[in-house]
Image 1 (cartoon, each protein chain N blue to C red):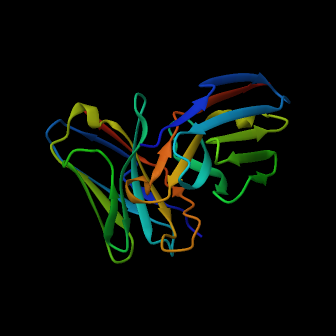
Image 2: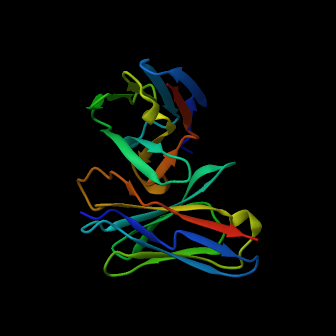
Image 3: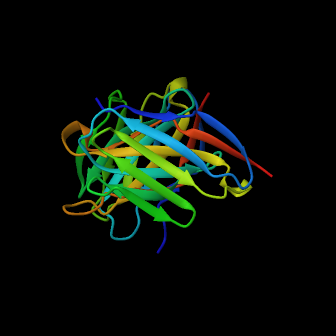
Length: 115
Length: 114
């Protein structure tokens, strides 16, 4: 079974631009979560989607948004990029729903550099 | 607000040594606890998942324990090898509301010297 895939793997953007990152979960998984990883803050939760609905959101500004499609694939968008948005963005998928383990499977990440 | 702490922040051991990594969390209302491994610049690899009703899980040379009431977990690595060198992260999945997410510790950087 294929793992979680993220595209692109590397991205360089200029301050003020916007960016869209994509995540394809493991087949059959309906929950997708996004995390930002930086050396200073570690791994921080951005948001979680299940069946196209956002179920939880972390403490990030409104410039960070996401969505999930009917095939469970998810996209994350960051508008008006700032230097501090440079980070590794990780996507995780899990089965979701009730009476499941919520075990999270992570993708390889997208390395975003803002100059 | 859930907070996860991992001690030590870094650990260097000779090959073959048994070692223990520690994780503590402040809110015992968790659904599960998961240990991950991260190699430099890479994503996270799940090592072990412990449900809140379980006390421990084992996989090969790895054993993880959970004491939910005291907010502690340990990851035991037996007969360490240079290939075990990586950052080990502990994370808890909260049981509801705004805690319905993984909250991570800052990790333990493990170096196993040949």
